[in-house]
Length: 304
Image 1 (tube, rainbow, N blue to C red):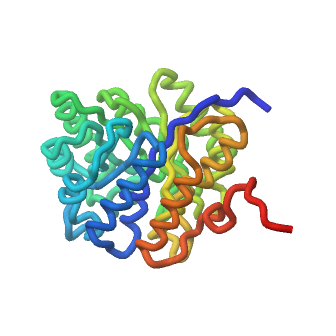
Image 2: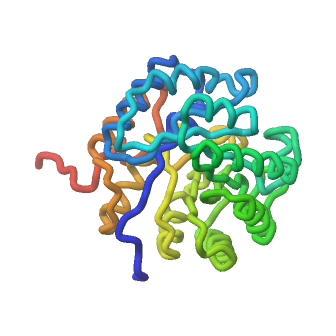
């Protein structure tokens, strides 16, 4: 086995990326879920997204959720912003970490935010500057990093170029998003390798979906390259809007279960995260895809 990180950092994205793909749930339920997740030992939570209510009604109560949660000093909370208007809302609300998003695929970016990738990057440069003026960090998320539902494969040089523009404009870190679960381990090695060669000093986060069953395999491939920062969603909460019926995000408890068994620390209480997954399942009113939620950890035994 190659040398693997001894510790990884997890960002729990269920309250935003997960619930954004579900039928709208009450504000109080969102607050309850975030507060429960804050008690699991996870150190980072993507809590809300500041978007137009008509565009994503599931996030229409972002201000109420942000004001209503019981913020824990040990947890860093962040918000995703699609444009400068959303960024200013997040900054005015008091967020200290924001994530600006752009698609490597021009077609997907136009479908998503009705502008070209280059136009979004111009906007993001302003977002980064305003965030830094207020002492706020800004990560740039590159969506469709491993493929686009409209264009198919997105060339690695194209993805690295988009990320490079964000780095040049001052992004504090980069995240590559596998928007519809098109990544495989060999493709992870290729993109991460090219990006690390070009920008070895830039912090990197990876966001995998399990749409085609390769989510945890992709995590392992990234660990072999030394990546130690991942997104995951409690219970596997969320879906994939471009692949109806398919699962979306990798489940936080499945990721924790796997890497902890490999001797890689997460700081997360697995039992508490499984309980949070059960709570998430109750909130959305459907069975979530997490297998660890169903079967429990490998150490669970039954009476003979």
